[in-house]
Length: 254
Image 1 (tube, rainbow, N blue to C red):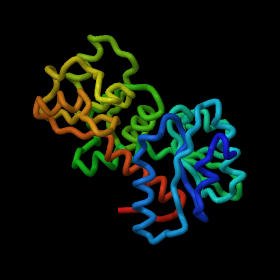
Image 2: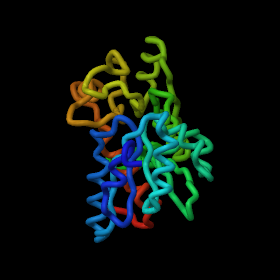
Image 3: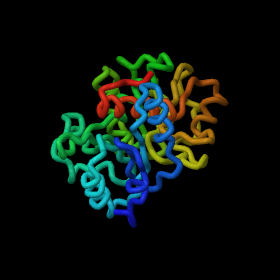
Image 4: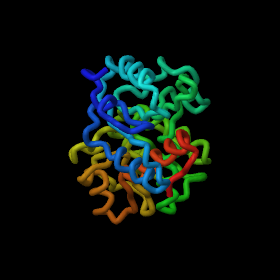
């Protein structure tokens, strides 16, 4: 265990949660969860990063189970679909979308959840964006896109995913959208954009990017230049983390 996953062995905390994925060194999740631990005076808890590629996922899960201190863990790329192979139970939402970002451990059993979609919808609420009855166009077909689409539909939005659309399909989608979402990795690192322009967009279009970082994506820059309301992925990150925290600990940071 110490060779592949030294962060588990090195942690002296009595209780653990963490994030599995690769690459994850940039993740803000430890900071978010440690702030929540401080809020609830959970001094014996820690949240750690567990670097594991998809072909190391089984070993990472085994190491977590063998360690015995984990209430659960988050899972990010590239293992959000593969993790289901190692879980003992799936929530109905996970069954629908086919991927998980949160796993709870109960009596040694792994239960898969997904908090990405509701995290995104809660971030929209923070921005006072009405979604019921609105046309939401979601670029992407991966785990984040499916989670967002499922939660949006459950909330009454007219949500549609687009995967590698043509230029004409993209133009029509932009023109029809009330809410435009990038749920692809495009824009990570501050370069690339899912749309060539927003010239045909409605005047009240809201633009959201699931990408976050110490940069502004080209999509958000374009929205700002056009005077459109917008948000990056930071709010979604915080809210999905809060929901995961609640699943594991029964407490909800605020």
